[in-house]
Length: 387
Ligand code: FEO
Image (cartoon, rainbow, N blue to C red):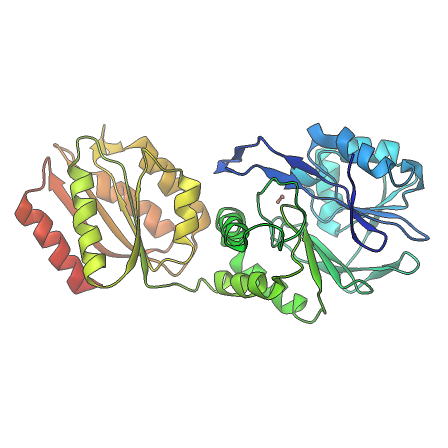
């Protein structure tokens, strides 16, 4: 079993999850990985673990380098089960290890597992632990992506073990960001940010500010590839995303029963096209909400359409709206559209989701049964006047 040395006496010992396609509602087309790292020194530290089904694979990898009972510390940067599911077995087999974690991390571990036999040492920002030639320095990053999150920095090697931050759901046999096409890695990092981190953008800003004081030559996240050649690009992308920086870009997303809502979607498309916007066009029959939200991350406008169905909206659009409501918290402009037979509730229902996300409604268009050519011309012209 291959174990990759990423710096002298620092190993990547995590696993790839090639076949995962649903990560709590997020379509992970390229699978994922749960990265863990091992530092060999006078004291030995394992940084993060893996999802429970991959426990034996992790332990087998670690065992190729060092007997498990020789591990002194298990650093738990984050308790979410993709990084801590293996903890019960890891702590049993690494019988001499102390868990280094945040205050919330200790509490969350106790809520997840029987920790009665575990030894905890709570760490805070600025605290350090010497392993010998290597030091572990801790920085709390709450809400990136749970209250317990922290990152661990090794100043001698200038490696930031960033856990969820800067991650990508990407299963691959490569380890580093210069071994695969950068546009694909950045796309997966963007999708990860939009689907996991976006609601906590203000906390990301604070974490970036703290991280900017560190001299970093490698960012080793707990998902996907390690950043060693494109650190500036990923840091700049995170800075833009955390500030909700919008491009001149519109998202048009809808589902349609008999084509009326779709006709309005095209009329809206025409307005943005005429105004020189980049636009992305999604029929929810063919597109997944997690791909749509990725494009929303840097968009100025989000336009959503549904007909009325049974005094409500189409289930696909309701799922999209729920996702938007959970992830988008500020800074977007919105357009709503659709058609109805005898109950024009669709717009009102969709507007509630926009209001919850503080999306500023710029225009709405709703037509009885089938919009006529004059109606569609009106939509395009009216919207052009408003954007
Ligand atoms: Fe990769 Fe928030 O866990």
